[in-house]
Length: 323
Ligand code: SF4
Ligand code: MG
Image (cartoon, rainbow, N blue to C red; front, side, top):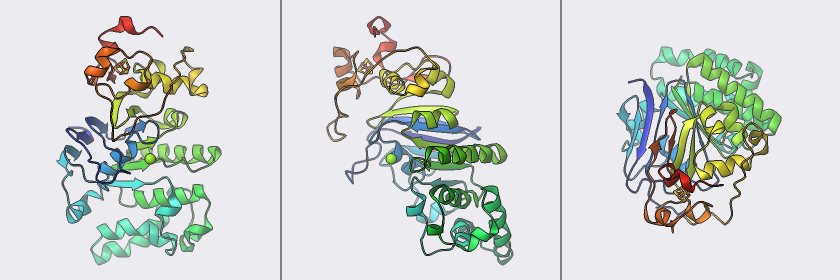
């Protein structure tokens, strides 16, 4: 009850059929109606894989993806059609995801036409497209143009209008502002927040940029090497991060660091290959606190209060936390 979307990838999670796809394992979280959940982590941590698995661009090898209680993990193309009325996706590069030979009105209408089978419904589509373009700050004059005639920010507005056309409850947004100038980023983030407020939309928002996440998210999940290492309400996570990896990410983000104490955790070494995961804790090869237990035992996410969960043995042995 109440939760719109739930993802749980157990066992092997998403398999490495294609080595470009990062495996994820034991990642489990919920997104409430109208909630903006961010997944953050360095490139290759599996956050895009999680996004694409929820949007069912990838099929998980085990686990569940629940939308309003319905498990869509094993759905085929035809079964996904009604689900696409509830969940849409927007991408990092709106240019690559918009057909260059289609006019904006046809691009925006596509998911809606896919869901609209009656003649009367189809007659209403043009007026609906006009209203959608207005919602995202474009006008009817833009409707007859092609994607290349727009700036990056405007193209992302087109992508958002298209996603919005079927009035979904959830939009999965994979790095939607990473390709944009910082000033344009803020406009798009504010538009996404306004649409959330107006329509009660939920977002799964994928980003590697902590300041973007701080701007938009209600909740943040931190991922490292295919695992979720911490999950907390935004203000809790930024005020008192508990996992050493989260603490290192925050200490490397100067604009956010000013808001909290001046802890310095500098990461050394490279992210290990996903094909050769460390035993025990996936972060131990870069963690300044690691001890022998970390090599033996994989830490489970555990509740530390304030709606915060952390996967780290320091929670049980706080005397070892001496930064
Ligand atoms: Fe570091 Fe050990 Fe915690 Fe992993 S479990 S983050 S290695 S202290
Ligand atoms: Mg990515």
